[in-house]
Amino acid sequence: QVQLVESGGGLVQTGGSLRLSCTASGSIFSSDAMGWFRQAPGKQRELVAIVSHIGRTQLADFAKGRFTISREYDKNTVTLQMNNLSPEDTAVYYCHLADTTRSYWGQGTQVTVSS
Image 1 (cartoon, one colour):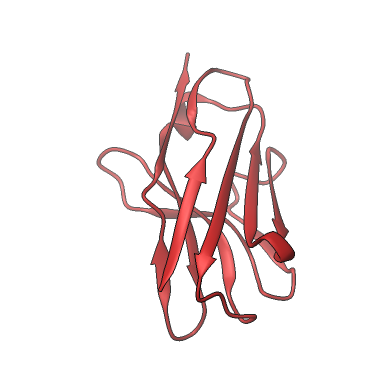
Image 2 (tube, helix red, strand yellow):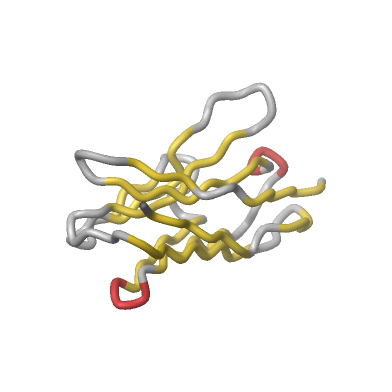
Protein backbone atom coordinates (compact mmCIF):
# COMPACT_ATOMS: atom_id res chain seq x y z
CA GLN A 1 0.00 0.00 0.00
CA VAL A 2 0.98 3.60 -0.60
CA GLN A 3 -0.20 6.71 1.18
CA LEU A 4 -0.02 10.12 -0.48
CA VAL A 5 -0.26 13.25 1.65
CA GLU A 6 -0.77 16.55 -0.16
CA SER A 7 -0.35 20.08 1.07
CA GLY A 8 -0.24 23.60 -0.26
CA GLY A 9 -3.63 24.30 -1.78
CA GLY A 10 -5.63 27.41 -1.02
CA LEU A 11 -7.09 30.62 -2.33
CA VAL A 12 -5.06 32.97 -4.48
CA GLN A 13 -5.78 35.92 -6.73
CA THR A 14 -5.33 35.89 -10.48
CA GLY A 15 -1.66 36.09 -11.32
CA GLY A 16 -0.61 34.64 -8.00
CA SER A 17 1.37 31.53 -7.18
CA LEU A 18 0.89 28.37 -5.17
CA ARG A 19 3.15 25.48 -4.37
CA LEU A 20 1.73 21.99 -3.93
CA SER A 21 3.68 19.21 -2.27
CA CYS A 22 2.99 15.51 -2.00
CA THR A 23 4.86 12.98 0.08
CA ALA A 24 4.49 9.27 -0.47
CA SER A 25 4.97 6.59 2.13
CA GLY A 26 4.59 2.84 2.16
CA SER A 27 5.58 0.47 -0.65
CA ILE A 28 7.41 2.83 -2.98
CA PHE A 29 9.02 1.21 -5.99
CA SER A 30 11.93 2.52 -8.03
CA SER A 31 9.71 2.27 -11.11
CA ASP A 32 7.09 4.66 -9.78
CA ALA A 33 6.11 7.83 -11.55
CA MET A 34 4.69 10.68 -9.47
CA GLY A 35 2.69 13.64 -10.53
CA TRP A 36 -0.39 15.80 -10.33
CA PHE A 37 -3.83 15.71 -11.89
CA ARG A 38 -6.71 18.09 -11.42
CA GLN A 39 -10.47 18.02 -11.63
CA ALA A 40 -12.66 21.07 -11.96
CA PRO A 41 -16.40 20.96 -11.19
CA GLY A 42 -18.28 19.22 -13.98
CA LYS A 43 -15.12 18.24 -15.80
CA GLN A 44 -13.04 15.11 -16.11
CA ARG A 45 -9.84 14.65 -14.20
CA GLU A 46 -6.88 15.71 -16.31
CA LEU A 47 -3.13 15.45 -16.21
CA VAL A 48 -1.22 18.49 -15.00
CA ALA A 49 2.34 17.20 -14.77
CA ILE A 50 4.24 14.04 -14.00
CA VAL A 51 7.83 12.96 -13.36
CA SER A 52 8.89 9.48 -14.36
CA HIS A 53 11.05 7.20 -12.29
CA ILE A 54 14.05 8.34 -14.33
CA GLY A 55 13.30 12.04 -14.08
CA ARG A 56 11.52 12.70 -17.34
CA THR A 57 8.81 15.30 -16.99
CA GLN A 58 5.58 15.77 -18.87
CA LEU A 59 3.43 18.87 -18.57
CA ALA A 60 -0.01 19.55 -19.97
CA ASP A 61 -0.10 22.29 -22.56
CA PHE A 62 -1.93 24.63 -20.18
CA ALA A 63 0.86 24.14 -17.62
CA LYS A 64 3.80 24.84 -19.89
CA GLY A 65 5.50 28.11 -19.08
CA ARG A 66 3.60 28.53 -15.81
CA PHE A 67 3.97 25.33 -13.79
CA THR A 68 7.09 23.46 -12.77
CA ILE A 69 7.22 19.96 -11.36
CA SER A 70 10.11 18.61 -9.34
CA ARG A 71 10.78 15.43 -7.45
CA GLU A 72 13.01 14.49 -4.54
CA TYR A 73 13.55 10.77 -4.83
CA ASP A 74 15.20 10.36 -1.46
CA LYS A 75 12.20 12.00 0.24
CA ASN A 76 9.51 10.44 -2.01
CA THR A 77 8.19 13.93 -2.58
CA VAL A 78 6.86 15.66 -5.67
CA THR A 79 6.27 19.40 -5.81
CA LEU A 80 4.24 21.47 -8.22
CA GLN A 81 5.08 25.15 -8.42
CA MET A 82 2.24 27.05 -10.07
CA ASN A 83 2.76 30.62 -11.23
CA ASN A 84 0.56 33.14 -13.02
CA LEU A 85 -2.59 31.35 -11.95
CA SER A 86 -5.93 32.12 -13.53
CA PRO A 87 -9.51 31.29 -12.54
CA GLU A 88 -9.42 28.46 -15.09
CA ASP A 89 -6.90 26.73 -12.83
CA THR A 90 -9.47 26.40 -10.07
CA ALA A 91 -9.83 22.70 -9.30
CA VAL A 92 -9.08 19.96 -6.86
CA TYR A 93 -5.51 18.86 -7.44
CA TYR A 94 -4.66 15.22 -6.85
CA CYS A 95 -1.27 13.67 -6.29
CA HIS A 96 -0.74 10.44 -8.19
CA LEU A 97 1.77 7.62 -7.96
CA ALA A 98 1.84 4.72 -10.34
CA ASP A 99 3.81 2.23 -12.29
CA THR A 100 2.62 -0.28 -14.87
CA THR A 101 0.96 -2.48 -12.25
CA ARG A 102 -0.67 -0.15 -9.73
CA SER A 103 -2.01 3.34 -9.17
CA TYR A 104 -2.61 5.45 -6.07
CA TRP A 105 -4.30 8.81 -5.51
CA GLY A 106 -4.06 11.38 -2.79
CA GLN A 107 -7.15 12.83 -1.15
CA GLY A 108 -6.92 16.02 -3.19
CA THR A 109 -6.25 19.62 -2.30
CA GLN A 110 -8.42 22.52 -3.38
CA VAL A 111 -6.93 25.33 -5.44
CA THR A 112 -9.15 28.36 -5.95
CA VAL A 113 -8.11 31.32 -8.06
CA SER A 114 -10.21 34.44 -7.71
CA SER A 115 -10.63 36.97 -10.48
